[in-house]
Image (cartoon, rainbow over all chains, first blue to last red; front, side):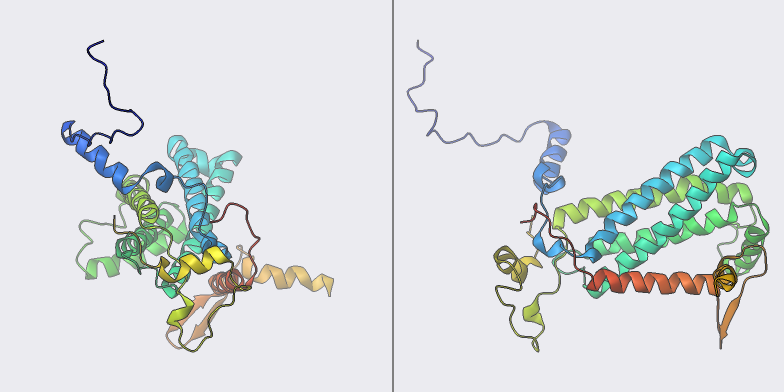
Length: 246
Length: 59
């Protein structure tokens, strides 16, 4: 046949990829380049992650999922349900205690990453998104306290209004306005925290989980022995704090 | 001894009475919150010192 090629298909060079597809193609190529599937959903983890301190990030995420799920049920059923029915009390308590765990796990995660200097290796934006998500979570927890509709929430609201008025935002963020605070609590702040958490996770996958500070940076300590750290770790840890420049 | 246990354990978690507070100069914190901060510090230290079970899927 005239269309047959004489070139060996196994040795022929692969054709150069053609940049087509408009802006959607460009976004797809950039996303796949930044987060290829094996980087986005890895099935192995670096050896230096074999420490309990590395567990608190995913514990925070698990608690966050419970917070969102219980909060969704509360939003669907409403205050008359969660104040009166026994199941409503249970879901309300589940929401409160998952938030307690969420905040506690997040703060321990923050302590661990702070003392690990987790912004090393071009991970500044990962650190910043985590810190801002923490501040957003504090605001979400605060508006959640205001939505309790009990004496505690009234006390907190009247105490907070003076401070917020003093800094000039009382007209836009009125803690005495229950409806406004409820909307901040169930719509605006969860959306902000949710977006920041997803962004934070994608950055963690893109830059990689930060390794511990290498022993070579601590001048007073002797070099690790082969018995102390297995070979794969020895080969990865010293330079692992430099994330790939992709 | 066992009879005192509910009294000891009930102090920081009894929600039907006014809370207990610790005062130190300008710092004022409830005993319940102080206990939570103490437990968090303990968990943080344990996370650093306790051995982690070795997994198979590590590179």
